Structures are given as C-alpha cells and as structure tokens.
Length: 313
Ligand SMILES: Cc1cc2nc3c(=O)[nH]c(=O)nc-3n(C[C@H](O)[C@H](O)[C@H](O)COP(=O)(O)OP(=O)(O)OC[C@H]3O[C@@H](n4cnc5c(N)ncnc54)[C@H](O)[C@@H]3O)c2cc1C
Image (cartoon, rainbow, N blue to C red; front, side):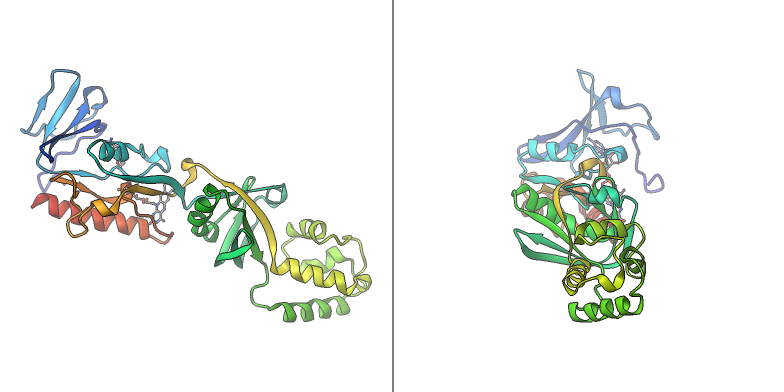
C-alpha cells in the first residue's frame, strides 16, 4: 500500500460520512481515537473546529465488516454510516453460528465429534434441508461444519417462532431395512452380551448411555432377550436421533453476519452506492453471506477489488 502511495491510519474509527448534494465529500474521525499514524498526513486532510478530524475525499469505501466476532474489530459501524446517508439495512442476524438445543442430551455428549453423519433440519415437522459431514456436541448444543452451514436457516426459522429440530442419521450408509438386518445379525452373533456391550460395535462410547436412555432399553439387558420391537426402536433412533433447537449463539460466536446494506442499492458493476455518488461498499457490510469454505473471504476480496478499482477511477 505504501508503494502505491497509500497512507495507512490505524485507530481511526470513522464516525460519520460527509455528503453534499447526493455526493460524498469526505469522512469524519474523532481525534481521540487516532493513536497511531503510520504515514504522513495527506494534504487533503484538515482539522475540524471540534475534536474531530475531517478527511476530504471524492470517493469513500465502506468496508467495515459485520457484527460478528467483535474481538476482530467488527463494530457494526458501517450499517449506521450507510443508514445515515439513506441506505436500507436488511435486518442483521448471526450466521454460521452454533445452535442451542433443549434438554441435557447435548451437554451429556459435550466434546463428542461425529464424522460421516447426515443431519436433517426439520421445520414444523417438515424436512427443510440436509447436510452430510462432521458435527460436534457442545455444552449448549451443536456446532461443527454441517451445523454451521444449516444455521442460517435455523436462525431465520427460530426468529419466525417455528418449531425447529435437528435429526442426526448415525448410519447414513444403510437404509432402515439393511440396518435392521445388521442389528439382527449382531444380536444373534453376540446374544449373550449385554445391550450396552453390543452397542460398542455401533456407537462411540459416549453415545451409549444416551442411546440406552432414549430408546428405553435397559443397558444390562442380555442381547438374546431384546425384543423385535426394541430392535426396531433402536434402528429408528440410529436413523433419526432428534434434538429440539431452541436458539442460537450470539454474534460473539458467529463467523459471519447475515443482512446488511441492501444489494438493490449498490451497482454490482462498480460497487458504487445508487444513492450517494462516490460512496462504495465492499465485504460483509453488504447483505451477502455465504457457506463456510472461503466464500465469505472471496466475497470480501472480490467486492473490495472492484470497489477499489472503481473508486480510483
Ligand atoms: C473466526 C472466524 C473464522 C472465519 N472463517 C472463515 C472462513 O474459513 N472462510 C470464509 O470465507 N470466511 C470466514 N470468516 C468470515 C470472513 O473472515 C469475513 O466475512 C471477512 O473477513 C469480511 O471481510 P470484511 O473486509 O468485509 O470485514 P472485516 O474483515 O471484519 O474488516 C472490517 C474492518 O473494518 C474496521 N472497522 C470497523 N468499523 C470501523 C470504523 N467505524 N472506522 C474504521 N474502521 C472500522 C474493523 O476494525 C476491521 O478491521 C471467518 C470469520 C471469523 C470471525
């Protein structure tokens, strides 16, 4: 940036934008926040009468990020700055965020990570989405890649006060019939073992007491005494281990913020505001959010590149 002639000012939190006749003319920074200045003042800056500094500019890019992970500098200021000059802000909410579940099941399984499971999202008893991969139990509920990727929809449905459930298919490679045959085979082969010992072939150790509890089979019951009803119950549970979702974690733990400056008010060819000439937007402050996998960073880089090029013109 220095090689290209840019001046970098850290600890210079922009407080407000300056506009005139629908055009940007600069930005205002309270003096007290300017602690470190890494390069000489630009000639276009001047002191204001109060304790702020005014930066004159015919182009300004808002790239202030969202509200998530405030520890990384996210303040939500960009939403206020944009709103103050007339932009519409689509209501913000946490996304790629862990979810909270009712009861104590998740807490009992805290720290357990499941791989190669299929998770389905049920909204008002209807299957709304599914993901395959890895998930994690925490002291408050569920996290891990496939849960985070379902979380945008979870947050929306919870906010609409819908009934939201997560169903975990612990044996996605087997359909119900094949799974039942496998259970039958296992029970016949190890008929003298206790139920809790039989389960070691099927489940991670931590899940065994939870399974016995939820399928209501005595863990001490001898294998060949397990009834076909009980075996079918176990099969159904292995394919549909359900947890009720009753909330989601806060912005502090959300990887990205959904909502933001309405895309309808931004020219996608330049990233320039359709409301204020010379004002541009880049990154998470815009109403864009994506799945995990680098797509949010890519969105920030691409819109940043385009906004920078356009503003420089
Ligand atoms: C823990 C974590 C993991 C993530 N992992 C991934 C991932 O694997 N893949 C992926 O694609 N995305 C990931 N993301 C999301 C991704 O990092 C963000 O979407 C992206 O960094 C947004 O870039 P941005 O430039 O818009 O905003 P930010 O990177 O948030 O930068 C905004 C900057 O603006 C500054 N600022 C705020 N207010 C003001 C103000 N008033 N004046 C001046 N400056 C201000 C802030 O201090 C900050 O430096 C992750 C995020 C987190 C928190």
